[in-house]
Length: 178
Image (cartoon, rainbow, N blue to C red; front, side, top):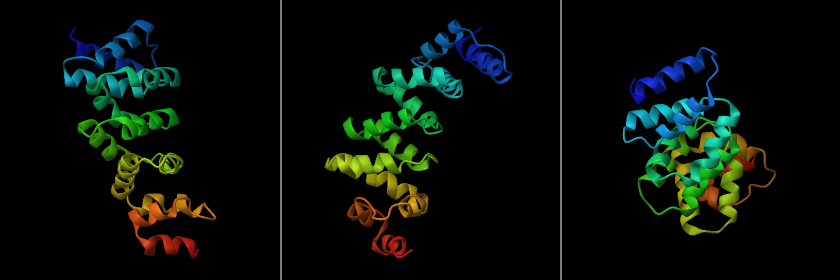
């Protein structure tokens, strides 16, 4: 049985509620570094759907993976509701050089339903121009409506200037008048 077939079989068994062995989980982790993009992607999707302990292990290992593996994991990470996964993605925006991984991370973060407002505010508080610019790009792509409710929670909008630059003065003024 080839790697893709084995990954598919493990995934099917997992969704049927069958127990997945430690060896099989280890195999899935190994497949993340496969030369086959299909095998790596299928493994990433399978691992991010598993129990919290497996997802936590994946997030813990994330910084040590090569860029090619991180590229495969960015999309599935944006389907998680695990703070640590998003923290890792924001570290890419903060620390990595411009390139496909940064662009993929920006595009993926802009599509997630996970509430990123606390990470956005933390990023703005670091006063790093490149990092701030990338986070603003995420906000721009996500759109005002994605962040409107989060901004309404604050009696005073933190880093209001940055939000005005992204969403426009009118949008922010409407929030403040509520």
